[in-house]
Amino acid sequence: RFSGNNFEIIIIDDGSPDGTQEVAEQLERIYGSDKILLRPRPSKLGLGTAYIHGMKHATGNFIVIMDADLSHHVSWYFIKQKEGNFDIVSGTRYKGNGGVYGWDLKRKLISRGANFLTQVLLRPGASDLTGSFRLYRKEVLQKLMEKCVSKGYVFQMEMIVRARQLGYTIGEVPITFVDRVYGESKLGGNEIVSFLKGLLTLFATT
Amino acid sequence: VAMTKLGQWLCGLALLGSAWAALALEPSGLRLPAPFRQALLPLPLYLLVAFGCYSLATVGYRLATFNDCEEAAAELQEHIRAARTDLRQRGLRF
Image 1: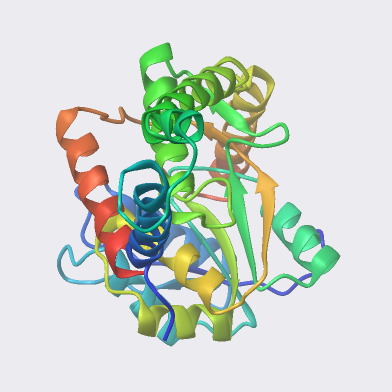
Image 2: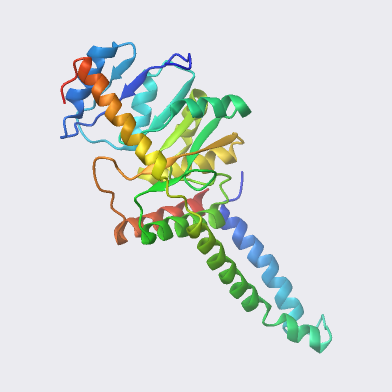
């Protein structure tokens, strides 16, 4: 609000059992339904379709996508975007004063190791592919949505890789990834295996 | 149509592999002096090991310089507190 940009917040909830919907409705009453747009879905449908669903209701020129349980300075993204007229601005934990909080050595090692492998295999042109905070031009997001086929967070990675292929410009902003403020994140063997599967799929198909 | 990354790697490896095979192994056509061939023979292995060392060093360095953002985390908690107070005043019930 303070930066003078017009904005709206679209909240897509797939029936989370934790009371998200009730809080969202109260926020809508407080700030007005032109600023807070509730677009719930009846059942858990997944990240990709959430993007499509959200875009149908978005009226602005830029779309910022973020996890609801992370907080960051949205205005920095717009500043960076204007700086280089970028098509996409992506948050990175690995550069500048970006980083993490509350991670033990093992988790940091896995993160850096996985990212190194990703850089070698995909040469994506962005330092952090699994970030959860990005700004897109609306047309760019629409174009990428058409082309991307992966599911889950591999889809996030694919977006950046495809964007690079299509010649879009990507700017980066350092972000702090504070471990889920209200809950625990898991990083076990299953997650690692599925990450590798996703990475190899992208390697072979993009 | 662009080549996939896998395609690029296979092409690159095929190119380098055939060049190495032509020069280091013993086809009847090309013939380099023995010392050169002896040096070329273990080259692929050396390169692999060198890449392994580079990988370890790079990941190690990046691990060591992975920022721990104490201030940012504290700031985030502060923002959340401030937001909760503000919202409570505006009538939000948690």
